[in-house]
Length: 213
Image 1 (cartoon, one colour):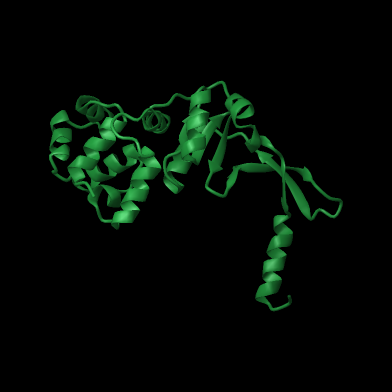
Image 2 (cartoon, helix red, strand yellow; image 1 turned 180 degrees about the horizontal axis):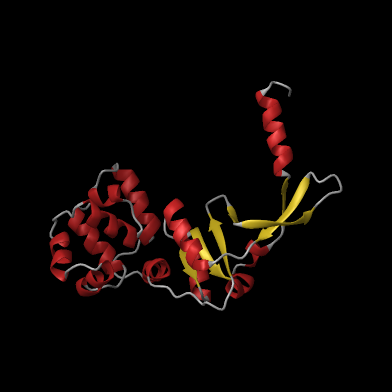
């Protein structure tokens, strides 16, 4: 697998950034980026900034993962492309260089290989016995949601356009999406879903612990 310097250069090139622009994004000197690409490894803080900006693991940059794992992580970001990668560049823009419309509502959503959901709220009951509750996406304060998601799960994409939504479909993960964009381009996330009453689920787990079921 490529060396640390080659990986940094490949990611920068894929993002369509010059060494000067990457330095501005990371708030470091351009010469520091040049040193990275020559193979000089940064300190822990610098490594964390690089990994966070490109949304890759520090282990990937340092080559501490197995060869196949490194290939999988590279593929998950660059999608096999070499040189400038428009999708990856836009993905990074949604992670690092987005705008938030203060007069719009936003939702917090998540997309995985076999999962689709988001931060929801109770909107009613699906049955008379109150065994199933109906849940729908709830509005979130976007800046607070970005900060919390970053702390808990990693940086989310912020989606404000059709292209943002299309790139999110490709990369998945967590996203803070503007309400109007979600309605038009990601409508499946707005479907009301039925879920088991959490109180009943908790009682069932308690009964199992006591050997009652």
